[in-house]
Image 1: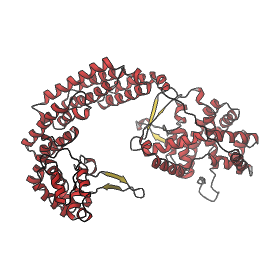
Image 2: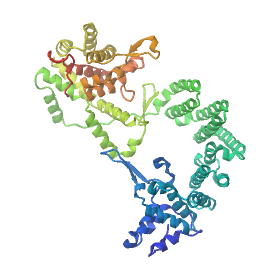
Image 3: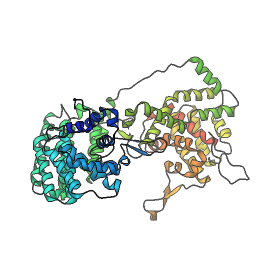
Image 4: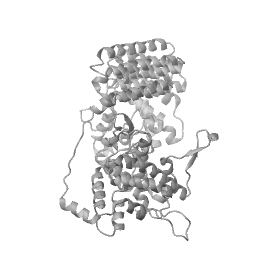
Length: 607
């Protein structure tokens, strides 16, 4: 960092503009200008310099330009993307200033910055094309001079500068600059790309070869052979040291992905499977060292690679290994117990409130007390995200009772919804003890019996058919006798049937065509029923989401699917599950028929 105190903008800029000045960062230029007197740093030229060195490099993902914003975020109220700095801040006068600066500076880092900004933004700002000789070729040459002169502070910067130079050279089809860019890659490899480095270095030239294979034709075989030999070296190390470290397996994976892409590009797809098989064997050497959950994770990574190259059978074979590792994965987990003291007076006050009123009023309080409110849950999660943003970025893995990973939450385009559902499910579990106590108290008062449920709560119900009543009575009776295994197996299928009745009565669809429509139709799943607008309108968002959390979403309970496919052991059918199934079922008693003079159907449930 520049330590000398300067008094003019020109002195400050000249301190960076020499062929001897290397390894400085863009923020150092900004800091040096900001140390000048206020009237100077607020001048037009100083502000253009600050703006020039505020843009981030290698930021194509934002505007498709090499230079982009340093900071991005979304406005909460509109969802609008905000960029700092924004290219809208660039004026035509700033472009002209940078063009003038590019003509006089001698330091390649500075020339690269000015010419690059003009190349990226001149047409956007002024509508005019940048000058071919000064901006296109001038930018490429300044980039290569920066790399060849070893001006950047870090080797990785040299690689992405060189990649950008090659991309630009290919765009204008300048063979001499293409060759010079390729030679720069090879020189960087000799200087930096050793086996000890992460693939961030030794993979860069090979990635450029995959993108611009014609440009590397003279060197292709040598580069390929070097990477094959590197893969072999990593494999030898993994086989010898895998019980002590997993690093060599990861390096093999990185190298295998590069070579697999090359074989796919060149048509030698038969060479891909041996690469992946050898990498999988290397990871197995570290299974005992890293534990069952890590091993399952590595297998899933390899499954994705097998599938990427259409090796589906090989990917599916690995499921057996994931299952075998379940017991070891469970041993990796440590239970956490937290006690929360609650004042007895508050508890007493709560039960007095919940158990007061008529039987109908008490029943309504019971149903609504344990129904999650989606707006509340969203607000809670937003607050949690603000208080612990890094925790919110973490991926959550859910596993079943046998230690097999089932779902990954917080990934993909649906990540926020996954976290919402998972958060609701966890908060439901936190109040399950209160739900259970509440049920016991209502049973003791004689307000929860099979007769009361069937002949009072569901009296004249449009959503329960006569042929279902006997099954439901047996299910509720098993619940009250605390035979939870029988209760859940009877009530969950009947719950789906009742939702199907809701769908029929409100004008929805219960059938869908089979994968081969000529073969006829099949019943829609519970999830397909809940997703229909008529059901959402009849039940409301809170209740439909509650049902998804309990019965259909793999991010949460998913009980309908787990029970239907026989994926739960006997111990899973406990009071927590049965209480929620019972509560969810009774909520359907809130759905009432519309008055006779109106169209037959349902009122929306008021919660």
